[in-house]
Length: 140
Image 1 (spheres, one colour):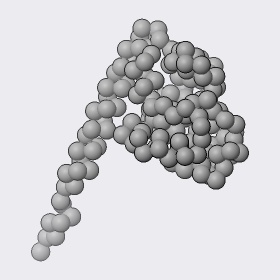
Image 2 (cartoon, one colour):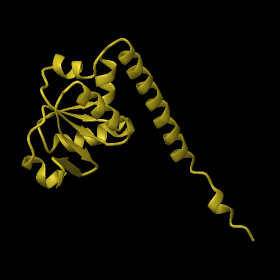
Image 3 (cartoon, one colour):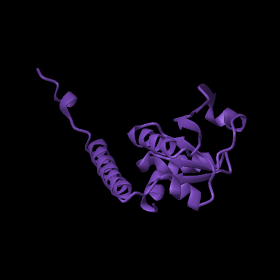
């Protein structure tokens, strides 16, 4: 007898995944258009008075953001992946050690769908500005 439960589709998870990829497409498309127009992602930070930043999320969008900021010599102080801060090649616990690393003027949250929950968590730990990658890209 075949167990058909192993073939069931989780419709909620599938829909969330679709929304995630649709959001990624639109943000990447907007970002590419901005780059084609000669706009530099670091201009958002400079225009808003930030002199350094941290990046939360090292998925594809986070990696692209780091590359773009490095190309324009804009300082990325540290990165955060889930609850781990990486500063100068050393890992620190986000909750316990956030005061052990230099303060970032802004923390850019790259997971688009989880922005609100991540922002709420970070606001309890730091007074750095918490901004979404979506805001950065849409305001280039």
